[in-house]
Image 1 (cartoon, rainbow, N blue to C red):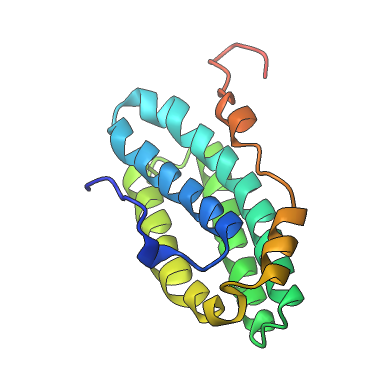
Image 2: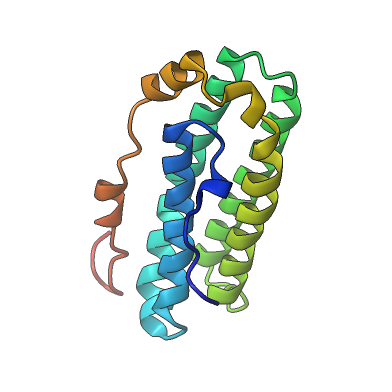
Amino acid sequence: MASIRWSEAMSVGVARLDRDHQILIGLINRIDEAGEDETTRNRVLPEVLAILIAYTVFHFEREEKVMRACGYPNLGTHHEEHRALTREVQELQRRYRRGDPDLGRNEILTFLVGWLNHHILLQDMDYRPHVEGSKVADAAAESHGEFDLGTLLKFRAPEEGEPA
């Protein structure tokens, strides 16, 4: 798979939400560039899954805060989609922790690319007309703070026999 590059066509019209979406693209590219060796299985996948758990909670809260502030009429449906995606991410992490031999780089990449294509590039675009250029949307997004990706990228799964 070729690296995914951000483009303005992906923008939902709120800079903070776009930056959040760029994090997801970065995670996709991180897995894609890592290859299929043991390092990917033992380091990159647990790192990405840990970031993804924190990311989903943080980003979905921010996105729903913006939608609520702007009176987005389909917030309930969008919230349910967020809940379903969160459950899927949690299930991927459970499977990884159980040592599921069928869960690998390709399945996680397929899930993340599907998330990008279906949720961000299709469903999120539905709220764009309600938030784009809105000072209320920008203020709501800004008030949610920063996703601390730098700290999470320092995450490293412990080696076997090493304390967690």
